[in-house]
Amino acid sequence: MSVFYNKVITALDKFMPVKLCRLNTNDKPWMTSYIKNLIVKRQRAWKKGNVPLRNFFRNKVSKEIKLAMGNHYRYNLENTRSCNPRKWWKGVKAITRQKPNKIPNKLRFGDHEATGVELTELINSVFLRIIDEYQPLEPVPTPPDFIVPDNFLLSTCQVSRKLSNLNAKKSCGLKPIPTIVLKNLSTILAPPLTNIFNSCLMEGCFPSEWKSADVCPAPKKTKVVDIESDLRPISLSSPVAKVYESHLNSLLLNHVGSKLDDRHFGSVKGSSTTCALVDLMNFLYSNTDNPNDAIRLCFYDLSKGFDRVDHYILLDILRELEVHPVLIQSIRSFLTGRHQGVCVDGFSSEWKPVSAGIPQGSVLGPTLFLLMVNALAYRESWRWKYMDDLTVSETLRIVNNSRALLIFSKVRIIFVNLYTKRK
Image (cartoon, rainbow, N blue to C red; front, side, top):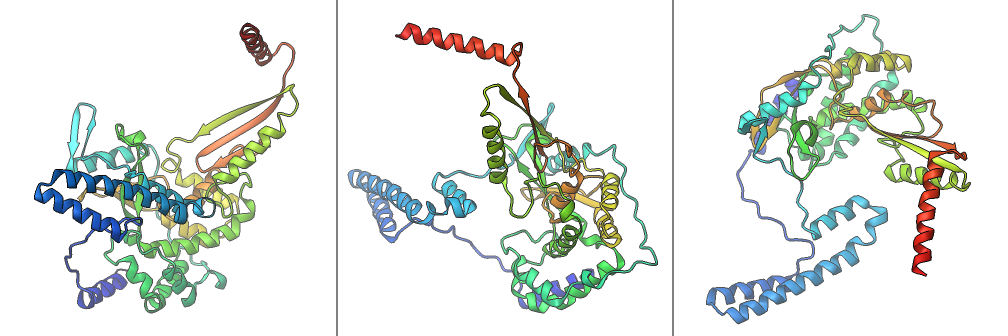
């Protein structure tokens, strides 16, 4: 794998050398030439000291921008709300000038305030502190009778298709090969990568170059106060690794897809939060037709669910589900010997080993977590799962001495008295 990276990087340095350039911010999608001319006239009036004319053009610019933003939403975004929610939300956030949550340059931990490299080391240690008691996986050699089925191997066309479908805006990970190069040169890079991927499958190994990832702390809240509860570790892995992971993921789903809990609505093709909410509301409405019935709902959230996955338990679950030994060996190698470092504002921490958990931001991660919680609350008839969130419900019969009926009766008397007084 290192030979492939060195060859590609050497070719990039020779034919596509890195050059420094100045980037200008792109205009907003609602910006027009008419508004730009008004802005130029406003600036000229301000430079000449003509305050009344400057105020006139200032008000004119504000009015035209608001009108253009409304037209942009009406003609370009309003129809995408149902068919493309991601595009709709992105456009709405741009119109309302919502800025993404960012990590502050300094954070206080106890009585100490950390910045720069010290801050990255602090965040990394907090992320890894919750898995200190977990036992890391030991590397296991590939058995001599290790045979890979022919339908597990990749073809050059498959790899080329996966490379061409990469998102060019995604991070390139630790290796300085831009994703757009992998995407545009997919037909040239597909043959050597096909041989590498098939060799990894036949040896049951996951290359060590793909096991180290920069972790980007993603804020959960607008204002970050506590590192452990307000930050989520997102691993920035190599796009080449993601291509190989996507193949392993498809093979894994082919083996265990029929055994997955059908009440899971997260990271499942053809399902979403909307499906979960519609199904839950349908249950609530259909089971409250009888006035003598009540519904009890219990909501659970698995704290640090991805980070607390025990690798030994996960491998036992894969064996119970009768996953093919080739996939188990590859997944074991994927989880063994991982390292992570935190990067914030150009400052990086030292690499530290990861003894447990599933890297968030990987392709295999969501599927492995689904299998980890697959048997959770399996005997409950009415359950809704969405990744690390679980909702369980039951229907109860209200009896005469029921506490809920007593509260309802008191509330009814209060409303009757209020209504009588108003009349």
